[in-house]
Amino acid sequence: LGSPSRWGFPLRGSGLWLYSDQKKTLEQVNDPKEVLKANSDIYVIAQDKESGVLYLSAQQDKFARVIKLTENTANEIYRSPLQNYGIFGIAVELDDASRIHVAEGDGTFLESSDGGESKSWAPISRTREGIVKLIQDPKVSGKYWGLGNKFELYKTESSGLSWKALPPISIQN
Image 1 (tube, one colour):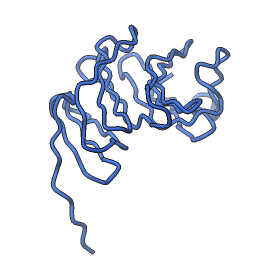
Image 2 (cartoon, helix red, strand yellow):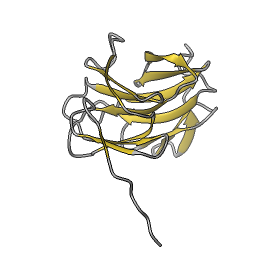
Image 3 (cartoon, helix red, strand yellow):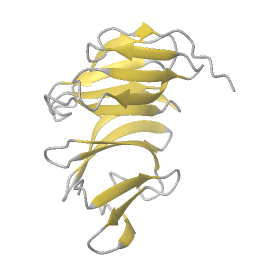
């Protein structure tokens, strides 16, 4: 599913599409149980590099959800309690794939310590504004950067327990 020969494409209003190098095709993921609906808005895809499991941020029926997608199943492991707020960041901890982090559009940063299996998520911090983009350091576990919805930049080196607002960046021509 999440191997180097397959890539996922998040789309708004069209669910999840996967490209396969082997088949040379782009196919929509069809979930017969409709946990992942074909008309979902998919915002983010995170992957457990070891198992290939995908974690999707899906907006369905006005609620943001995290869906865990394996080769054979799709399971909803988190649903935002807030209507019309998105989940714009998901990260699988590099040194412990059972720790999943979620950045919600209202600024809440959540953690699951069991890969979302128990659906028990703890809010571990908040930022002043909602995170609309979460970037994970590819080499340092627990290090993330977040872009707020008012374009403020944030950084954490504690897996989201605390965030530091970064000074504005000036771009000059």
